Structure formats: structure tokens, C-alpha cells
Length: 133
Image (cartoon, rainbow, N blue to C red; front, side, top):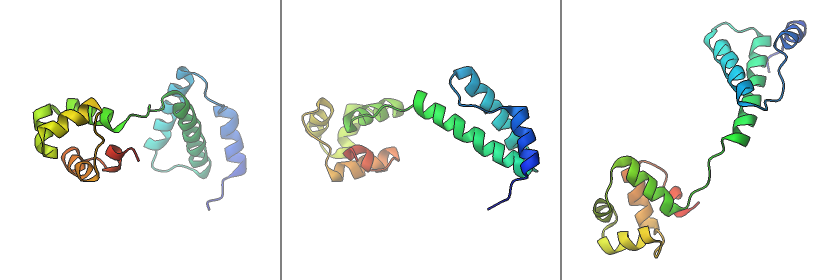
């Protein structure tokens, strides 16, 4: 545990006046300050503490305002297919059958563990994504 220079940190707190981030503008301002601090290779203990505090404030704001929506395994497959230019016939080759690919994409059939492993290898994402885990 690193000791923080109390007087220096107090002065920095008075100068920076960090607060709970409530707006996109405040978030952008905090991100700019984080960037400035991160570019400095020789931060004081007070500046490191300020960097940690600002990072926590930004993370809290972004978790509340930019959270990713959950997606079903089939939605993930569709998105990955689109992003990678994979057609339904190419998907059929990956999982082994045109019929299975069609049923999977229509939601009539869930993705099996073996199919999840094949999709994981093809798209370079964890197999758990395709199993809804």
C-alpha cells in the first residue's frame, strides 16, 4: 500500500474538485484529465490517487449510461455473422448442416455444446457466449 501525501492530495482535491459524474460533458472532462495523468510517467502519490478516483467516477457513470444490453445466443451468432461477412451457408459448414443452421437461426433449435465450440473457434469468442452462460 502506497502512502498518499495528505497535504498534496488535499491541495489537488481543492484544485480538481472531483464529484459524481452526472452528464456526458462532465464525463468527457474527467476522461481528458485521466488522459493527462496517464501520459505522465512520474506521477506523485497524490496524482495517482486522483487518477484512481477519477477512473472510479468515470466507470460508475459509464456503467450506468453505456451498459451493454444482453443478447441471446442466436442474436450473438447473427451479429457475428454480419460483422464477419458469414452467410447462412457458411454457418452450415461451420456447424455441419444446412438444416441445423436454418433451425438455429430461426430459433427452433438451441446451440449445442459441440456447435458452441465450433462457433467459438470460428469467431474467436468464448463458447459460453453461445450457450447463454
